[in-house]
Image 1 (tube, helix red, strand yellow):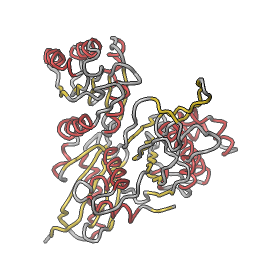
Image 2 (cartoon, rainbow, N blue to C red):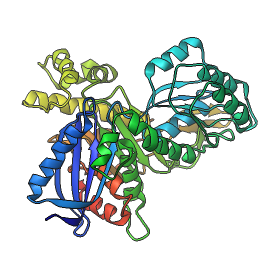
Image 3 (spheres, rainbow, N blue to C red):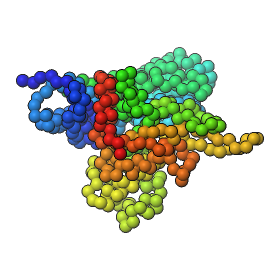
Image 4 (cartoon, helix red, strand yellow):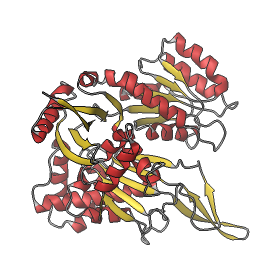
Length: 463
């Protein structure tokens, strides 16, 4: 006879693997974990049953788990296209809203859409389109033009409209005429230099749960679990915020940066103000969100290995790996994305590629500082977040977790005199998510944030 335990099953339906972590709420311990190749393209329940069977064997008994929660990045993740007015303003604000909601932004458009751009957009087959543009009371013409173009398109996906509020009524009429599915939200940039992305992020999550899960064939899994709550990147970002800020009763680690090196992308999450740490610095550009996520689609260690070679410079990597046929070895990566290194040369190549992915992704995420000159001398201008004072860097993702020298990879994310204009963390402590728990911590926080935080602090290994 089975009995209900105070344990939680937390599942990640990934593009390559379906991962499962079993956590005991009473003892706040990880008591089991396993993974199996994902089967989303055929029948998601095959991979799910595989991990459920394996965890039952590990436990040696039939248990009714109190919580069974999941997240997913399978079937291409949550793909979004964002459309705004000015690239540096409303288009950038829309992009930040989408990334902060855990989506994979596959296209960003600005100004009035052309027919060619619409064809491109349709070919991308996004799951959601975020239409922004114009501050409240500002330009209406562009967002109305884009709404009209989209209403006549072949896209049958949800549209989230988060632009100039004075155009909302006309946009509703336009999209209704095209029988489009849409939601009207508050403007992501109601005034110049003011970001308002929280509502849009919440709507994206709601749309993911209510509509996208079914569209991606994930619905079948819900007969075995309590629900798929969010995209996997959202779960990781939720964990980062929890670990940083803590709860009312449990102290967090303070401002931090999280480095997630994956097979398809390298993501950086920062939970930090990023204000200038030295006086006399002038800030320019959009205000940075306290919780920020960037996604580098050309820095995935398997599917995009060739682009890492190009971005880092092939000569730079060859200098560290003399005698290897880089083109041949890197060409094998996307063919066998689940394959782990089996020889010393493959391990060395993985390490070098991961170092460059981490370095480049952090340089793109962190702010920069430039020197310009005014009437009274030099002026220091900051763009983006100054992360030099951030004291914690957490590494996660297979290329870090399974590497023998993860600290060597994370060291590449640190401020360097070789590139003093990149405002990366200066002297942080390194931690490793060696149990691959962060997605589970994000899911667990939906049930009991205090316990989730204590589990995270218990299992993050300081390097």
